[in-house]
Each structure stands twice: as C-alpha cells, then as structure tokens.
Image 1 (cartoon, rainbow, N blue to C red):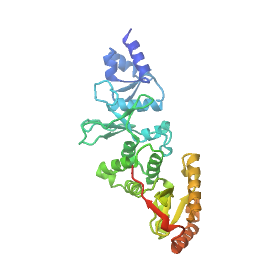
Image 2 (image 1 turned 30 degrees about the horizontal axis):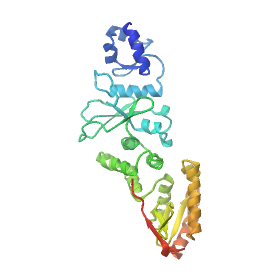
Image 3 (image 1 turned 180 degrees about the horizontal axis):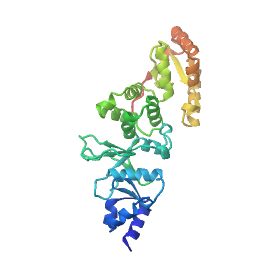
Image 4 (image 1 turned 135 degrees about the vertical axis):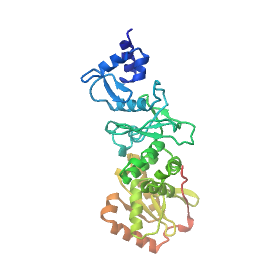
Length: 334
C-alpha cells in the first residue's frame, strides 16, 4: 500500500479532514502535500495544519471536524475528547429552534484546556476551560463521532457572542423546558464563569428568571408587561395544593388574591401535549373556583390594557375561591 492509499483510508474514516502531521506520519512527503495543495489541485488547506482531501465546499460536519483538528495539540494526531465542540454548533445539534440549522452555523466554537496556546482563526472561535480546572470538563461523543460539551456549558460559552438578548433568553428557556440541561446547572455555569459574562444584562436577566421560576420566553415577556403595568410580582410556576393535595402549577399566581394567569399559545409549547396540559391545568383551577385570566402572547402584545384591567379588578376584589384551603410552594431549581 502506498502512502497515498493509506491516506485515502484515513480520509474516508475522518470525512476527508486530516492534519499535516497525520499526512507526514503516513509517509506523504512535504513536496507531495504542497503539490496537491496547489491552486486547482485535488486538496485544499482549510485551516493552519488542517487539510481537506477533496476540493469544493466543505460540509457542515467537515467544518466541525476541521475546527477540532485545528485546536488539537500541534504535531499530534487528534485524540477523542482532547478538544470539545461548544456554542451554537452544540445547540443546533440538540435541536434548539433559536440556534438555527447545523448547516447554517458560521462560527464553530471549540473548548480547549486553559494552558493551551491556540488562537481563534477564520471560522473557529476558541474558548478555554477555567484555569482552576485540571483540564476539560467531561464531554461526550455525539452520534457523528465528534466530541462535545453539554447544552448548559454551550449556552454559557455562547452568551457573550449573541447580539440578541431575546435569542439567548429563548435558547435558555427552550433548553430548560425540554430538560436538555438542568436549571440549577445552567444557573451555576452562567454565574460561575468569567465575571464579564455574568455581568452581561441578558445573562443577568436569564439568571433572575431562572431563580424566580420563569421557564419560557412567553412568561418572561408577560413578566415585563406586568411590571410596566404596575402590578405586584406574582409567583411563577408555583405548586398549588388544595386541602394538602396537588391542584395545579399555573404560569403565574398571586397568593394574596388567589388569582392565576395562564399564557395559552401553541407557539410557545414545544409539543401538542404541552398545550393540552395547559388547558387541563386551567380547567382544574376553574373547577376549584379560582379565577384564571387567560391570554395569548399576541394578546399581551396587542391588547395588554384589557388583560391588565382584568387582573387589577380580580386582585382588588380577592381573595377568591377556597383561599383558606390553599397552600403553595415554589419549585426547586433543578
């Protein structure tokens, strides 16, 4: 088998993405490498030390593999888990709506150990693990064979680079709602990372919303509306008990008046079953004779005055229903 035959097998195993060190290791002379990388040649240089054994546009997977190869220790063959994908590439692979399709990712974020000297280059953005850590956080191997951080870490890494605070809030809400990461873990990563990240307004807002129990972008926008309208802060997603038995978990609840707010929208519920549970919850509250104000996100944006007026009336005339038989508790962050 010639060196080029060996390289073809290697390339087939690595989606045609190899490092210069791998080519040398397989016996390919430097002159041959240079010749095949000539303008119009069969190979192309993707990044420093990273070569694609074919011409033309790279696939989304090849770009990810090239980014990992570039950030790997120089002169060494890429080792599984030595560099981890993070940021939007991880969130898109997890299926988060706000992250876009994996093929649309323009910047590939990678995570390396603190002591490594690799600079961001071209479409690769380099993140470093905290200096206090002995190495990289635990990663996992994806279905495509690449290694990645978890969703919580990916959200924390991408936070400083998103220009839209609303997009970041929506990503965090969807990730926690779908249980792709635990709320407590996300909160720890957002506040326990670099101080510059923790101080960002959209990061502080997400941390505040996670702490008070807001789990969706619709609830976040409803909270802003209530504040602008001068209404007191409700409990968000509390566990209500009637005579010591579970009753419901409304979106928002004012315990002093025993009034609930339910935000009804298929757009903000990830599965039809989620929407049906919202309707069932509202029916249970109504059956217990607790007034429920129902509104869609569209109503909150276009007819906020009507919703606020109804809530003010109910809050002023409460407490309602069997208030003396009710108890409630905040959900634990976890």
